[in-house]
Image (cartoon, rainbow, N blue to C red; front, side, top):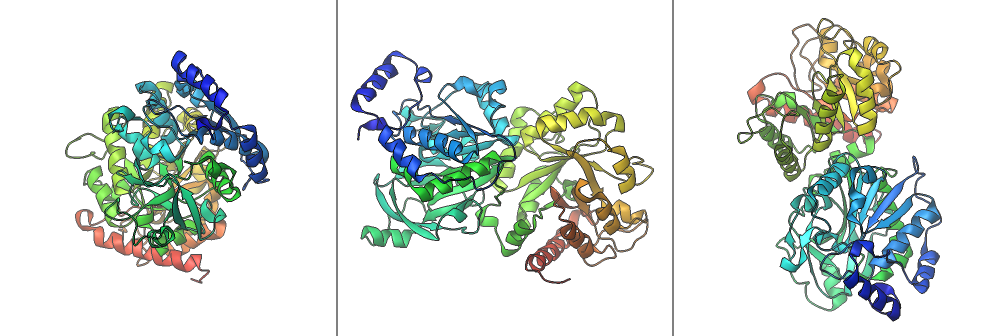
Length: 572
């Protein structure tokens, strides 16, 4: 069939247009009537989950220098019809880079780069808009050739925007035959996205073998090639080794900041988009990036039985940066990775690194903030929370803090602002979709937030984007029952800053969880009983500052054991 899945006469018209008009002015490619009928026959009847709100998906299909895959038109039609049939989203197809202007981009929930090869656009403002869209919680999807998007195709696919490769999860397009016969293994059959597929299946397509930055430390692999079974299917002794580790993923998910990312290489041939099983898989992937299908993204290399149990429970354990505030942020990131944890918090008075001897705060340059993102990504660690003590109530000051939070990709500020600043802060929470959890010290230092009752009075009438960061260490030192406090806050508990103390006195100091007087297990089980899932359960260890790693590791072990037991339905 002619290239572009169009009749030969129609393709000749498009070829003429490509010479006489800019690509962005050409009409969107669509499938032929015969292919459209095949797609319609294969579409699932309903969405996997009901959308939380009306959703909009932007499909961008511009190729630069490279002529484009013949499956692009089929995918445009398939995803448009898939959204219409299921009612899960509305689709807009474009190849005009102007669609990435800030006012335009904010009207979408997710962007799908449809087999895009080459340097789609070089405008730094448009690139920044896309980056911050993803970091701030927008969805990003790619298929097949998207791993060489934003490269100089006529210069050997030289990378022109490395951070796009990080976001999508890989670079490169090394491959065998365009219809290579393989066996695909479903590595995560209980995952909400890949649960739509069998444990393994045969496929014929052009399968890429990716290069850096692909790593199982960064992405959650869903599908991969079974090398031995694929070789047997091809009648050869072994597949050619294109990577030292012989690891050839086919599909994965990840987070980049708050953004949800889904990629699948099964898109070289148009037939992928009238395959009923693959359409269900793609439906799951799109509902994930749109924000309607919750799905875990802890990188594959970090996964342990305990972390899988925590995914099941909705518990996310991270080290609060104050635990390691006598080290630089980069040293703290390394320690969190050493502990095997995928999450941490940030702190506005911690130095970034030896090479960036500045505080982690909104005065950092964009290049310095990018270095923080790259360090976190290389370690496979997400910064879920960030402590900024006094978010200002004026418009300019508040926006500066929230812009910084979006560039870091954080989900929740922990702060102690003046109560009169809360109306402004609440508006920015809703605009940026970043929570603010109000942190407590003792009654003298935090008169409006020191107890659950005081905090709830202060936030009465505020949106659900504002809640509590419960520092239970201060509760216990002040004679408050942490279990009663968790119960009183309920779903207004956005982050839990956990401690166990050697004694319930004003000078009680931290000890590993489960070894002191703080009833750590009962606190966590109360969370589970209430169905409260904080953005992060923060491990803040404020003792033995320079040599605390063994005690922190013991705390992580306690949490992991409790997670396994609780997820299995075990009794305390």
